[in-house]
Amino acid sequence: MISIKSLSKNYNDNEVLKDINLSFNPGEIHGIVGENGAGKTTLFKAIAGIESFEGVIGYSKGNLKNVMGFLQTDPYFLSKITGKEYLRLLCKARSQKEIAISEKNIFDLPLDQYAETYSTGMQKKLALTGILMQKNDVYILDEPFNGVDIHSNTIINQILLKLKELNKIIILSSHIFSTLYDTCDYLHYLKNGSILRSADKSEFQTIEKEMQGAGIQYKIDKLNLK
Ligand SMILES: Nc1ncnc2c1ncn2[C@@H]1O[C@H](COP(=O)(O)OP(=O)(O)OP(=O)(O)O)[C@@H](O)[C@H]1O
Image (cartoon, rainbow, N blue to C red):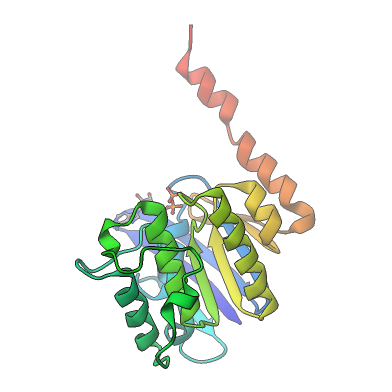
């Protein structure tokens, strides 16, 4: 289990995360939803251990960093590294034995091409393939569906359900509610750095309505359109 207790984060005077308390169990898919700038990526970076924070993030099975795959919104690649080299590097980082990389190329990526020349969606698929090949226990996926074609979206959906079946911990963010309905067991609505509401599937619609309705009429009125 991952447990987050009293997590807060400031960037100078900007309090980006405020007293977050959450827990994630194996075999569960959790979705973090919220408007742009709500703090989703900051929360993910804190869990991934690449951002400082106040509070405690605990993992019941040892060092989280050694068993976690983090898919960033815009994955970073070293220059002049091919897709194949990248995947090999990630496998080596987990001391995986030499494996037939081309067999794992489920998104049909041009693996001999430099990763930096890939399109946005291809880069996301390469990074995702890499963390899947690592056979991690925990997956943190920042907008895994964004910029990815429909066919690949379906594949990612199925992968998530398979990971759940394998008792992994999965935490993801998305702005697309239909995909969240398909995959997530729980949703957490992050607003201005605080968890406004956590819900199981039976209450997803409440969160969707809350998010859709958040002051829209007031904002449109302010435009004073004529
Ligand atoms: N490195 C940084 N330095 C200063 N402020 C930052 C930094 N990173 C993020 N922020 C601020 O933290 C807040 C939360 O940003 P974050 O990227 O976590 O939001 P998000 O919910 O992931 O947004 P989006 O849906 O647009 O991806 C924003 O106000 C942002 O400007």
